[in-house]
View 1 (spheres, rainbow, N blue to C red):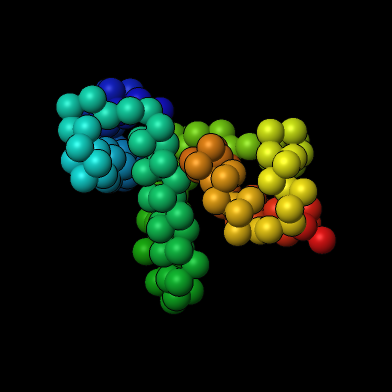
View 2 (tube, rainbow, N blue to C red; view 1 turned 90 degrees about the vertical axis):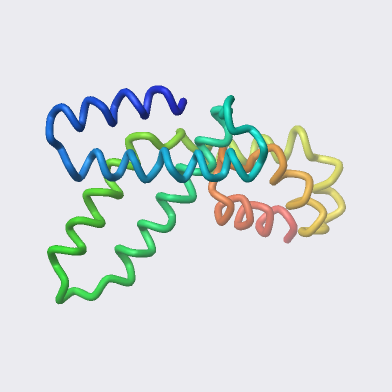
Length: 145
């Protein structure tokens, strides 16, 4: 996802007076800008960075939904709406089968060592932002048995 697409969607949400959508997209844009500044690419924000930030923001909103008490239904609904909107911008993640295929082909020599730490170190550089870390860890555990 590019930052320009998100900006145009935010402008469209403002014109439509869709406050919830505008705020969700605005949160994604500001988080991406902050990370871009921290990493020294303020003017030219790469798509990979934006995708990584989107996944991180989705994860934090999911935690908000999970920790919100049931007595606060209106707040939980607001979090859920924000989560749904952010999911529209999330990159498509690799499935378990695709991850397993990558591990057994590209990293067959590292997987053969059965050293989980070494495998994760090698794999996460390539798959970060493309697959869920928990799922990668689970598959690596299965392969190390």
